[in-house]
Image 1 (spheres, one colour):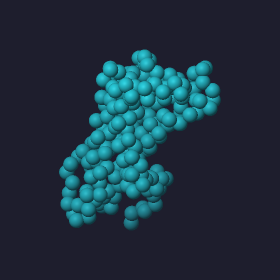
Image 2 (cartoon, one colour):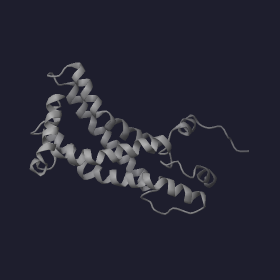
Image 3 (cartoon, one colour):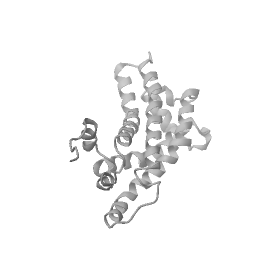
Image 4 (cartoon, rainbow, N blue to C red):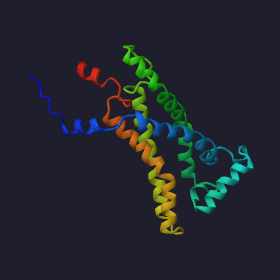
Length: 201
């Protein structure tokens, strides 16, 4: 008969959370909150500042001075502005897609249970969307490395101040990295149709 013992990788991935339940909720909160942060806060290092109301400029200036975040201090370092350019042009469209795909999941699951096939590659977790998760996640996690390095190597901040700054930026490293792990370990990032997949193999 067939060998039913699972490989260590298969055992690990079977315990790996997919984008369901609490994990789905956490990612929904992350992507929904990221849209205004990108447009209103980070965007000030990309768009001309006069596009923003004085209040928003003052809030970012207050944050940068209070927490000694030199990256968010105007005028911005060219390398940091280039990372924000990537965020606005490449990541921002993905945030909207990710929110849409995550919101569609309960409906798709219901349809799947009733035997309907979902042909929308943008919201299915086993094709284009899974690939985009890998691209977005690996690109974003990588951009955080020079940011962390600049904080750690800054001679003008104390260890505590470095820790606080790292804390502000850490979610933008952890969530993308988490997404890459899910996309690499799971054939479907939403965890649907596992049984059907096994039958098909």
